[in-house]
Length: 167
Image (cartoon, rainbow, N blue to C red; front, side, top):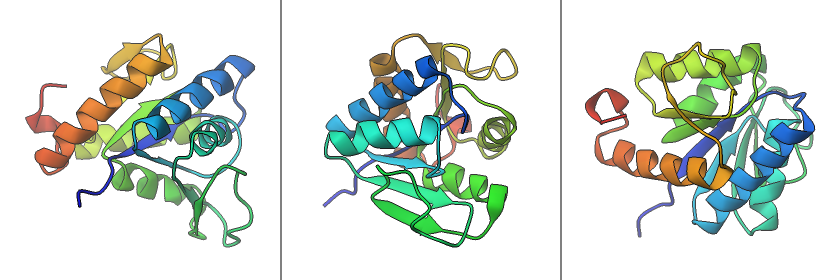
């Protein structure tokens, strides 16, 4: 059996209402496609995406900054209490085969930079990362989710290196 694709969502822990709605829609779309959602397991974008995925019957892996697995967003089905603080961002990126950036601040920028460094496919929705990164950007959550799934599949087949794909 082929394991499901793993798509990460990165974004602000203090998301706007619009950002939360976008993240919820992306989480739902990924779950309906059978993908596993990977995130930081906390509030804001992570919480909204987790809710969307879990409401659609999906699996959500949340890499938590602290040591208590109960300190997770309600939609996280597999909490991984890392005790690493913000350094858990690297786990989110490494565990994902492609990532989607929704509204973000320093942590999101850190994750995006790590994607660029290791060649992990990253796309943005709306102005999630501003113009700091040369990535594909989408307006509609469903289109972003579909493209992330394509990139995750291509990443899996290329050994996870976006440098060898047409991104």
